[in-house]
Image 1 (tube, one colour):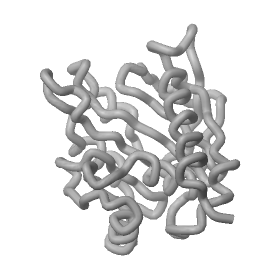
Image 2 (cartoon, rainbow, N blue to C red):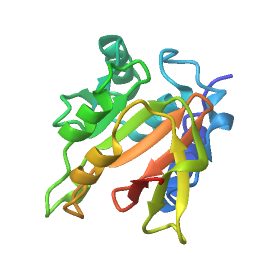
Image 3 (cartoon, rainbow, N blue to C red):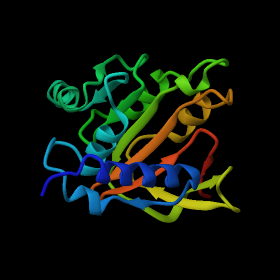
Length: 196
């Protein structure tokens, strides 16, 4: 089966919008992921996001052991331009990226300007697993009281993200995907603390 570029990618976009509007809600992209037959080095959910978000106007950076190959393939499928971590609109941190890559990606990511805060980067990260259980406490717009999420990542990204998003409305957006085709969006407005 092949991916329906209109129907499937519109559905992915709706899932992403819903997840962004309601931080802590884990969306499932399994229905669309079964149609993905490109970029076997990446999680299918990451491929879906790349195809949904990237076009010839966008720039991107890949952190991976196979950075050159994956960068070339993403460019071929989306026509998006390769950029360094400080300039990229979208930054992809794959599960095989060297340790410290997520921290580096967040530190380098552009945060927009006071006149154009929307010109910030979105960091999309492959993680081992995600679940609505104790790990991180989240508060902010779109969350009724508090949400808890556990994101299985070896990186220490929470504190770095907090520092990067101190000057609201400037900041970076984070999207996590896992091998089960799950998606979690953490907009810059979401306050995150490690559960005690």
